[in-house]
Image (cartoon, rainbow over all chains, first blue to last red; front, side, top):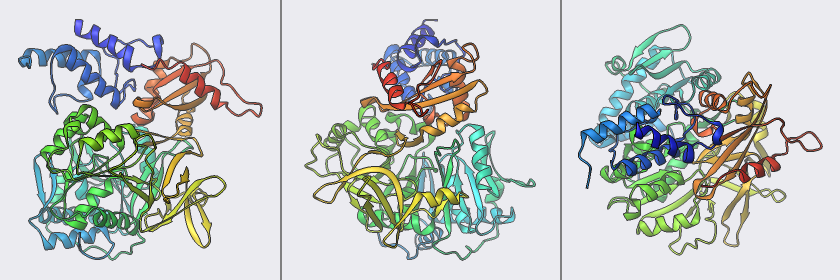
Length: 87
Length: 498
């Protein structure tokens, strides 16, 4: 639950530029819905990595796995439970 | 550097493959393809293209990312005398359909549900890629001339639809041969351009492979978007010559560890497509000692026509010049407007199927034909040109060229939109931002989110506005023209800037 809250806050404050008029549900498509572009994706990955103390390798993360808050949560959750936190 | 003669792009591959069949042609994510294997695959697929009805002068649409298979399809198209038309598979469906209809491709090579297929557009007929590879017949390349079309590249058009730039074998050849000579590329090199096939930058790596026998390093889509992955890939693949837009190099510097060097093998890094911010370039230069850095300039219509090697004593308080003409190019400046006019061997044949636009694009001066770049330049005492700005409403974002008029035209097609105006402004480190002001039939008729989703389904992601603002009216000047200056100011003022 907390993962989605934090990512939603980050996305609204940093990546979506339309201001308070926009609302994000857990299933709003962020990338395929045109809200976040490729630069935004890079920023999003950096935020997730630093906030949750994980590091993605290539192929672990792509537009599909970052497209909704729900998908991001499951991606982060999988990563957190799968691998020990890097030192 | 010394390669087979001639200017037909597929003949380069034929000769190189005969000379060094065991040489490494393509390296893609651990998968290797020798020149001998590549030629065998090209010949086999070319037979299939021919059997599906492709003839000289036809077009083959490649709705594919840049992969080993799509490079095979590029050369197979050229083998049967057709031009290839790269269309990005992640473009919205509507835009892909418009491009396919516009170029009237005979066949389409595309991935459908994970299976690579070659399909006839009119009247059916589909062959799976793997089946095409098992052809046993061999086809001789048809006789062609250097003025025959080799590639059609779609670029943003202000009327709302992309337009196709036709480049001949000779046009591509002029650029590739020059890069090989100027940067001394040979069979020991590993060349890479992370740009999609539909970008003119992608002629550098594919055709230097064929011309010089160099290895083409293909970066998979899963890697290209993330600077850290891409920089690691560059080092792991021991890439020697790199060509990309500045924003990718800058991204790899900021986030990819390029600040600590590009690895022991990198020796040439070329960039084109947009202005490289001078302070960042100075940092990159310091991080890559011994690497030749050069700014290549030219719109898709002319490919590269001027270039400038970044000097060791580069002064970062000045903008980096676009430099002096390449040896095959003729470049001059309109004395009244300061517009850069460019002609010569690398120039396009014209826009596909658009004779009026083609006529408007060129100007004849003293018996020479020049393309009007729309770029305003100045010329310094050393003879170097420097880019100042645009004469029209075209903008660049991460090296992608965008006509703001195309965004407006697409927005105006939305059922609730009465009028739209798009403006772009520079956000310094964060690049170009685009804001679209939209007036809809009523306040309740639509939402920002709906417009954003519509943009995502109708425009490539790089063209979608960063921000959509719903307005009651769009400001006009006294002649009824949209007051872009005040809209731009409104967009800039309301940008939080964080």
